[in-house]
Length: 110
Image (cartoon, rainbow, N blue to C red; front, side):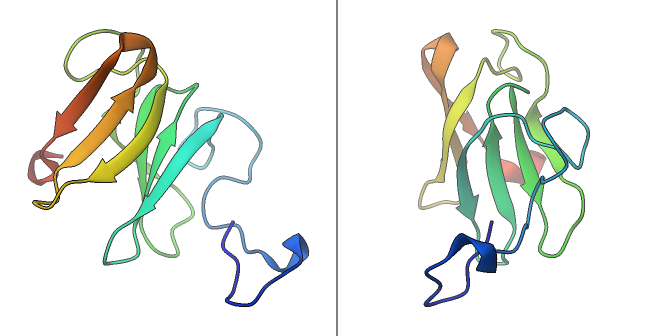
């Protein structure tokens, strides 16, 4: 949900990602844990149950899985991602909760 500046009531929010019930389709999220907005307005969402990081471009109706999507321990897999953030070089860091690790991704390769 996105809330205009000065909003005080939740009914003024606008759905900007998901909102189509829980699920694993490109237009759904399942237990989103954190969201990060980059300088272009794209959203990066830790989608916990789906074990993926979704990127939603501004005004998009679907997201793109840029990391994960299957549960596992390999370097390209996640197990309940919780937090996403960028470092000063715009690399993506993901707190991979049940794998007990922090994953590092260079987004130029995504």
